[in-house]
Image (cartoon, rainbow over all chains, first blue to last red; front, side):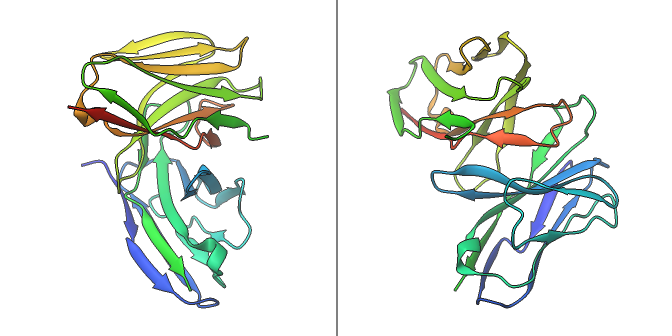
Length: 114
Length: 112
């Protein structure tokens, strides 16, 4: 079954405590992205990756890091989380090229930073 | 001004009605226009996309793009309670979906 998985699904942490949210896809997709979703603001792109070792900033990259060492994995790293990073996070993957149809989102990670 | 504007709703209609969801945008360079459906506590799923202006139909769903007015619409015919969800419009400059700009979403409720 084609899918994007994220872990953890729910996380409560404290300001300054480094955390990583993992994302994995089993479709051999080239493109992967991270979004955050906040009420009234919709989905905003944090980072995206076009292939292994190729990443670029989205619209709201401040306070986040990513890495793409393997095609299937695209972890999101918060080195020093702050309360304004409390949000619902989605990882997504797509085939790239002209295959807009092949887009999949993960189930989401709800992060609360106290 | 946001690049993509979408009325948040909520929008409530009776079962069987035709639903019209709309978005406006400011950047004329957008070429790909997408609609996503997001059920509560789930990730978005792509419903359909169109390239440039025109209409596209898929079952009960029709997407329309009017680039001259910078306005896109999604119509749902014979709406069902299972269509109750948040609908997100989105736009991209490229076909690769590497950079997508989303609207804030419209929450739709279909009353049985």
